[in-house]
Image (cartoon, rainbow, N blue to C red):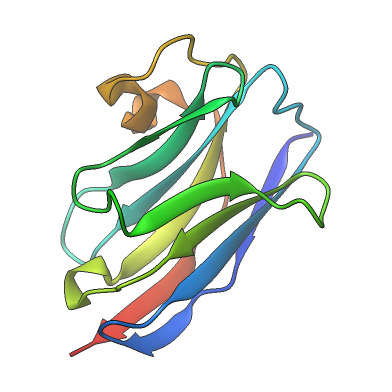
Length: 130
């Protein structure tokens, strides 16, 4: 059974940083893909960052490019990190990690399409104050 559990959310002032973790069990990210999504109050869920090409490459939404980094945690097995720097109030949202059984072969907007993913965590709240 595939399970994803996010952690690391919280409240921070604009310009600050947060590090989100997604622990994945029952899933092989060697053949699949992991992505991060977010949903702000009253808005649709949107893709933030994801892996493709069997986890060797990354793809980001324009709104977070240069500020957020998705990576694997070298110190914790089966854990994916979303490092968020230079946070803005508009980054406030519930952040979800998601898993796709098959890896994307190429990078493009489909990496951030929620309909492409098979499994979801329950989310963690991130609040950025001005």
